[in-house]
Image (cartoon, rainbow, N blue to C red; front, side, top):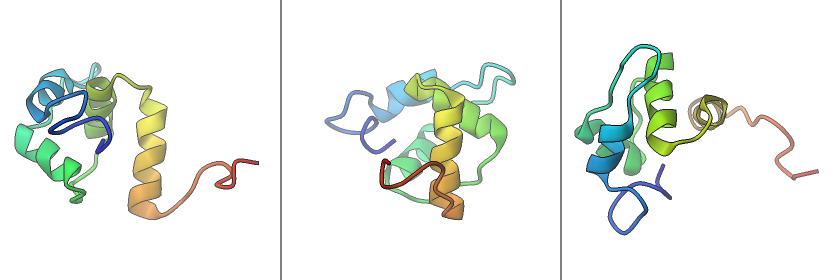
Length: 83
């Protein structure tokens, strides 16, 4: 998120929030929540929020799920050494 969203990055907070809509449920993310995510604050995570984040970034849901698991739980999926 922090690499893609925010001032001087490919997506503004507003543009991301407008794109961040979960395709299955219609769940959206507010601009203030996006701002919290960009700042690294923790938010309440649900499957629908992860779907909205994936839509906003234009990446596969699985990638967002893995990143959230690593950030919130500390579980690193795959080989962190890249082997």
